[in-house]
Length: 218
Image 1 (cartoon, one colour):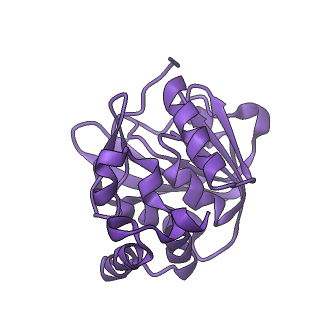
Image 2: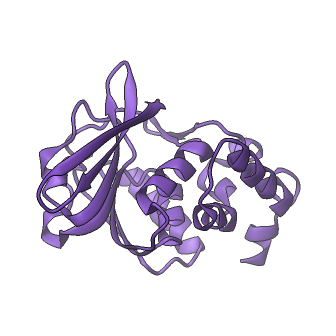
């Protein structure tokens, strides 16, 4: 574990600290989120050829037409979901390489993550096992459907852009819960939806760019 955390050159702790400094400059204020970002070795989630770019503020390809989100997007969505409070049971739609999942595991008591692409899920499982994170459960499933059998969730994060908010995900959000999701096709915006117990309150936040949320599994 120590060798993964310390690393050398572009994968060193110092490189990770520069990432955190940049996130603070970009407006990330939640210290719990920042600590989570600093505790996860991002370079293990990308191909070795891209490891030197792992801590740059860019999204990187992870295969199958998918990407690992830029650090700012990961931090911002985590910060919005937390809103300064501990998270309980969280659902993530789009495991991808597992990096956002790992960050969520540091700020939530339980993380359930769904991925539609089986080989990608297998890679994510390997990465997360390497970090010995025990509060994560992964499932191969269609993210549009979520995990109704395990609902309700205190928070839901969608890491791909949907043309509209999937109704089935709203129904899996506990009263007082928060859903963060990119919405749009050619133009996308991050939305926060809060279940007040009597209504779903929607806030349009900032412009983003994510891969599209697709249905089915493969």
